[in-house]
Length: 185
Image 1: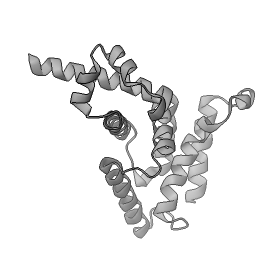
Image 2 (image 1 turned 90 degrees about the horizontal axis):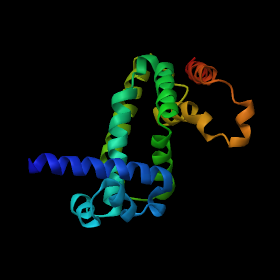
Image 3 (image 1 turned 180 degrees about the vertical axis):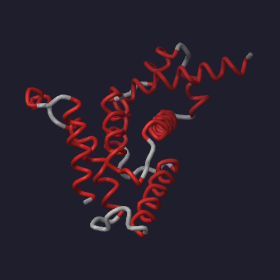
Image 4 (image 1 turned 30 degrees about the vertical axis):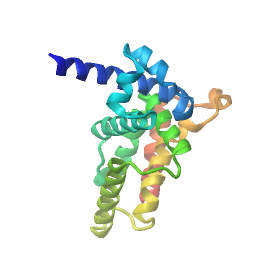
């Protein structure tokens, strides 16, 4: 019984922290607000995660795990991967904000091993596909992966003033897929 309560409390803390970090970043997030929303005290939060940075690492790692499960990665159909990536961040803008905060506030920080491992696995898959000649060698894998990811998330970086010119979601997705097809041809 106590274990289930501990798991439930940890889940509530992660959910509250995900919202707080996505909204305010690491520097702007407040542990007290997270504890209040989660219905626990700060001591409990520190007992589970050690520090605010440790909590952010847990939140970001969980976010990446969810993303990996939903989006997947297939070098045989990188345009479809770009489309799924576009869909994921359109449906989960808070996850994209978490990623942005991570990039902004941790540029020289200790790398998260889970992220390093995922990136390396994807680069290795791209390298194998390039050796099989199923993916263009026009760009190295180290250039191709971020290029595809940037294309897939490009619409989310537009300023609000661009709003009236923004095409429908379906049209934006179609452009993402077509652009990735073009760079692969």
